[in-house]
Image 1: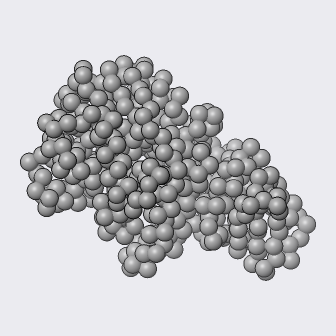
Image 2 (image 1 turned 45 degrees about the vertical axis):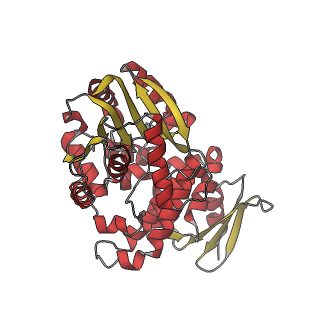
Length: 391
């Protein structure tokens, strides 16, 4: 039975004004927090009261750790996180936890800087899980960034190509352009641009697994004369290009290294050239708190990662001699992309888990990661944009 003390703890941790949270305990007893007349209901199952210890200490990171350790569960954890996001102003305890633990997580994040060696290590941590792993839940183009559905009935692969098409249009990509792609993933954009525009593309990555896959892909498609895949840090590039492309790589740069990144863009783009970037931003009014606190993504998924706000990005690009224009914003499309990825991941889990390194904790962590991001885009806490930069 739920005693009065536990009820008080739950009500203090989860203050819900918008929407309804239905909490079920291991003895099947339930409590309801929020507006029972709401059309939005999220369901949370508590399997161990240790989950509350984690949340009290570490806030949202503690909540994620309780999920990873199967101390709580939900039929749709994205909806629970979305509900918390809607009630952010009433749930500071669950977001930040105790200051000492928040500081500890921030310091652990801070000691993983994106120096040249640190960047390679941080990128490898995430992207070198294996090409086979990613192939089980990405689309056939092996594209690991937001698709662009544009309110059309597109499957994921076509929506990814639509994203590539749009970024090519906004930078006026044309045949014969000499292009630098910073962060090539598994080669999806390079293949698309080379086939459609016959452009010459230098594509760089720090992931050995991605480079291996991309090289084989390009060779198979007969595009080796147009595309050069290199394992290379952006700081090592010293050549001027007609166009520079970077699709969701900037989030891995790290705030400390933004000045170097934009200096290199300025140095490596021709005076009449254009830079096209797709990137994720955090809401301007959340940025000041975010920049001083590590979150779940930084601790468990992208060590060294950091999101800009649009305001911080405008200031930084201007400081380093670049004009910035936001051409397209499509956060809801990213939520859709993430939902498809999560469904693919869960549907193919039996196949993925044949590799022993992918255990139940990994499954919970990865599911939480995809759901966490989906909820972020749905609640407008984060967004995704295509921008252009020029001198």
